[in-house]
Image 1 (cartoon, rainbow, N blue to C red):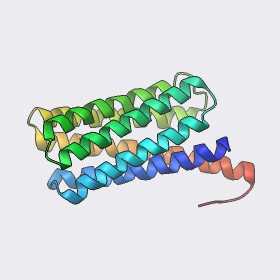
Image 2 (tube, rainbow, N blue to C red):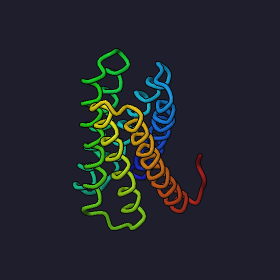
Image 3 (cartoon, rainbow, N blue to C red):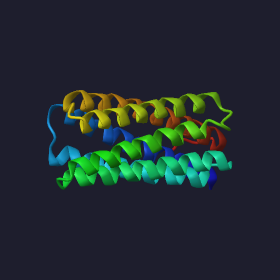
Length: 182
């Protein structure tokens, strides 16, 4: 069961990261209800994926890191929803907080991680989330376009790290089960 939680959680997280990255990229040019809604959904999926990962991780440090990621993505999702309803400043502040928690969570997971590829994917995701937090901070200070661009680049780093992580768990699961699911 633990293997399935890691597999499903990592794919849910990666799908959420890709959804949020697509939304962030679109927001460089124009902020719309559609791309803001996609960001809310993408961050929400990341939160669910991280919660599933937390349930499947065997050590307390990794579990706490995944839970920090889940809390961060949930906070970012709520912040994006506030922006959707016109509360731009409050929403951006929550996005900064949420992205910072996601970065801290991914970095924290590395404290006891021994698998080199997972250390790399966690580091990529931490860097991406930190870049997203920087982008939202820039937007709070009136630098809309540079902030949106930094957030978009960060979201693609996160999506890349998350997808590599999901592929790692997919391969591990297939080797153990001697089957392919997807």
